[in-house]
Amino acid sequence: DLERAWQNDKDHVIHPYANYERFHEDGSVVYTKGDRHFIYDDKDRKYLDGIAGLWCVNIGHGNVEMAAHIGEQAKNLAYFNTFEDATSPSAANLAAKLASLCPGSLNHVFFGTGGSMANDSAIKIVHYYFNMLGMPKKKKILSRNLGYHGSTYLAHALTGISSTHIGFDLPKDMITYLSAPYPYRRPDEMTIQEFCDSLIEEMEHKILELGPETIACFIAEPIMGAGGVIVPPDGYLIKAYELCKKYNILVIADEVVTAFGRLGHLVASKEKFDVQPDIIVLAKGLSSGYIPLGATVISETIHKVISRPKPENPYFSHGFTYSGHALACATGLKNIEIMEREDFCGHVRTVGPYFKKQLKTLEDLPVVGEVRGSHFMLALEYVKDKRTKESFPAEINIGKRIYHSAKKRGLIIRPIGPINVLSPPLTYDKDAIDETVDIMKKSILETMNDLSKEGH
Ligand code: PLP
Image (cartoon, rainbow, N blue to C red; front, top):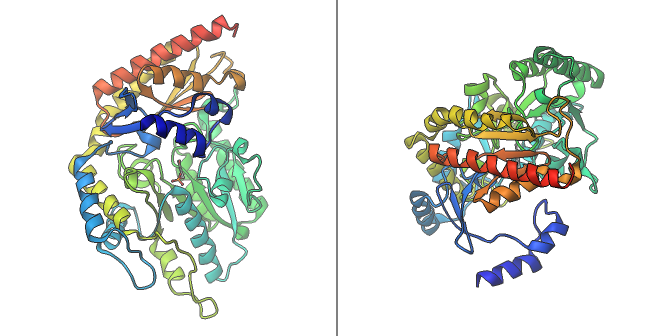
């Protein structure tokens, strides 16, 4: 039966971001069950899930309380939506809960099924808002190189990873990509402070060049995830937000990865970074991946405008079959209840620094250029030469090689070019951390050995 699944997958499944050449050789690993931060394949091999599926299974796999709750809700009311005058207790109560968690006056929630949809919704809300205010010229969007915002046409266009743009005609005309706040890759001669200042200068220069009256919003992950876990210099976010305020540009915080415990807080913008966005975008850890769910949380100010449209444009015409999905929202509510009761954020704040400290010891290895990140959002960047930070040639695929080596040893990590990401379920404990660091070390050493045999 499982053999059939493997074959069916090979014959019929389109895999996101698959490298088809490799994929067709080996086929897929068929994962069959999960338990906290462990996951098992069809041969009953056990792995540490070092990436929480895809930065999302924050409460861990196989949570029986969650499973029971989903079953109950499905029996009661699996589906209804929030169209027109409809709602459900779970959609209404989750919206209220998110309003209580989000900072400032962010108190109205538009639901969808994931991060891309939530970002698309945020942009449509912003455009509609400025139209309603009689400022239809305010359409342009500031994004950043290496920012990741999703895979629908617009969310992909917001994504500043240009290598992924090839082959598509993404609607990029309204988007300007600012430099990535990537301290490790800053110009050699600059201190981090100078680098930070230069990013802000660049941003202000771009705003003035484009004309603030044409710019609707700035979208940014507080820490970039899929771009390679890039932590901006201290003060960067605050200063970027200040510029936006100065020029009447709304700020969208894409907290799809950073919220729900990964950085030790349910929402990171205010609690960790001391910034106040106009819109916060949530997904992934919002439901810990048990059911697809995304949310766009907007400020009272924006809501007041979009909820009182002018007679000539009476509808905010935007919505999905699964907006306010009763079962998905019930899952989100239960997820937050479990996280708060079990104090997952406290756990992450306690063991996160240990995780980073242990992983940092790998910087002693000659190919580990930098270990970076925060709490349960960490990455290693590999370089050929630590002094010059010269990268390995892309075709060597160092991140992927180390990923395969770690998988063989029972640890799943995420390869992104010359970077490996670690973003485990929040159940990860010291034992799991120690085992992860040990496997990473062995996998890096094995890969270095292979590379040197191949003459690199
Ligand atoms: N925003 C960020 C920061 C993400 O990391 C992701 C997904 O990885 C998305 C948006 C897109 O979310 P989804 O894949 O649920 O559409």
